[in-house]
Length: 218
Image 1 (cartoon, one colour):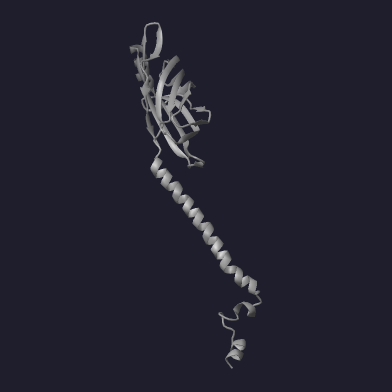
Image 2 (image 1 turned 60 degrees about the vertical axis):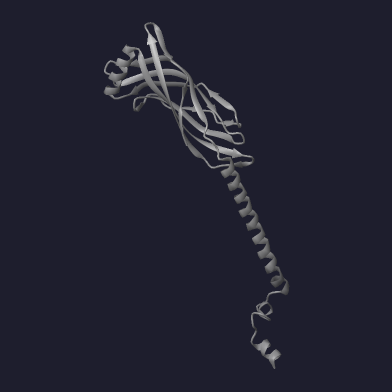
């Protein structure tokens, strides 16, 4: 009687697969599929955990930037102090202090500013990969022709030119990625600020005083 009742009232434990047209092989494969999915998920979690541990142990140190040279060939303010023409070349060095971490410089824009105003359009540097403990060197030209500036800044810059002493600021704005083994991080924003003190004496053009260490924010 119990066997006959099971045939009319199919329970999920004994007759569910057959009563809904499923093969017994399908029922047997379900635990295998679940185990396979769990195994793959476990491998992914373990890999991410290992990457996190490596990242925390290595803890990348931000690169060090130096302004090594600045050469100004043209720095002219118009008579009404509302526009400026600048032609200069700078040499920037970047040091990677990490022993096991490389750095991708995917985008680096360099420009010059006076007080709080940008006086040259950004110059794009070529993408660079920097190996651990390596030094990268760039010497871009920064040129701005008839760049509009406020009369207040134009007048202040004109007085500095007459005095033979100018404080300019060379800035780098970009994006970098870290490389640990075969793993590469997401992009990080990089901002570098380098003060450049320039002096001149009579016919001698403006020249750079000394190598300057730059501030770096990531």
